[in-house]
Amino acid sequence: MSKQFDVIVIGGGPGGYIAAIRAAQLGKNVACVDEWKNSAGGPALGGTCTNTGCIPSKALLQSSEHFDHASHHFADHGIAVKGLSMDSAKMVARKDAVVKQNNDGILYLFKKNKVSFFHGRASFVKAVEGAALTGAAQGYEIKVAGAAEETLLAQQVIVATGSTARALPGAPFDETQVLSNEGALALTAVPKKLGLIGSGVIGLEMGSVWRRLGAEVTILEGLPTFLGAVDEQIAKEAHKAFVKQGLKIELGVTVGEVKVAKKGVSVAWTNAKGEAQKLDVDKLIVSIGRVPNTTGLNAQAVGLQLDERGAIVVDGDCRTNLPGVWAVGDVVRGPMLAHKAEEEGVAVAERIAGQHGHVNFNTIPWVIYTSPEIAWVGRTEQQLKADGVAYKAGTFPFLANGRARALGDTTGMVKMLADASTDEILGVHIVGPMASELIAECVVAMEFRASSEDIARICHAHPTLSESTREAALAVDKRTLNF
Image (cartoon, rainbow, N blue to C red; front, top):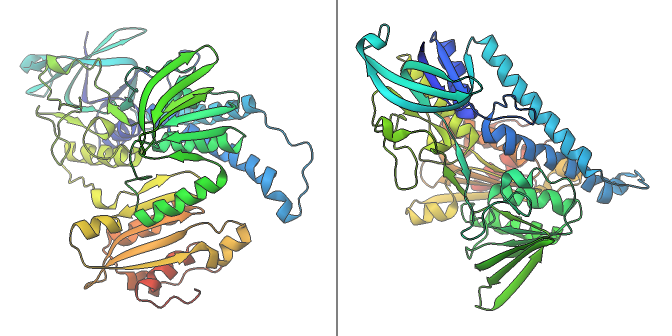
């Protein structure tokens, strides 16, 4: 017998589980279906973000940063370390424990908010009308293929099935030597030589992890510029810092044949000058983007429209071409960011409940958790130039910040861009310590359409890294106080 709900959410990642919880808070009878499994075969809610993305990568980055500090920076603080070693297997076990805590936390939140959870793969069966649904004119039948097959009915369906790593043509992921984000996060030993194809965020972060632990890391990037989506001045500063740390970065390359052998991977490539090269590594991480995950959804059964990339086509409010079917997160247009998926999930749940959910795509922050961290919100300087917008720019280096000096990490800067006539903040770009936290103030400021003068006039605690944000705002008007 079919089980009926007001809302069925397909996918338990950041967009899906948040949408389910918010819909339940608004009085809806909600089911969420997710197929992720842990090593024991049990549910592993949280999607790519929790299982093979944001959360585990940050756990490894934190561990490797501790090791890097102990290896190279503790002595500056008068701390002598003898016999330092790294237990990579224990580091990965800690990462796994952090992931499980997040998995279990989402299950707890479902129980707290009375969200029914079904463990398995969900797919559309058909649209249903009339007598098949209680209190609704039409809806959808969803099949759940799991340990026990279930049939669910709902008037409203939210698809939040996320994305998967894009493989390099001719070099499929085996997750042993040719690695996606999943394989990169499962390494238990430091590779002597590590190659990265593409300077994608996950790849760059994983390259940073294993570089700190002693791997020789080479990045092959097809674009002629490094981190092309980042403000050019900030990207150059980051590039300089990464090269100084020992990352070898090759730009404008063309990747040829990839050969996988028992003991390693060989990559034929051509440099920007057209010269043939060869890279031999123990492990190869491919980080050339992600593709929407609609495999197995059976979209054709109900006529759900997909685009040429396989993404679900939605309007500005995340409505699909089908009444009562919505889609959020990586499976639709826009940046593939966990927090963007969460915002869309909340907005859709509120729209279903008759409210006016809202997502401002202009104030979604971006973060790369390398060392130094890179974070930004709004438009870059090159975008403003291309759009013909008159602007003012102000920068402030962490080298002149007292807290950064005390931390022993003065790499990078804060850069603020403001409208030349109105002074409204158009973008803020940070490379340096704790950039991921500092960017929040700038997001709030832009959401309230603040001017650089507003930030310049706000008292910031001393000594803090956030003073650099204020100083960058002062620099827009060429009146910094500490540089």
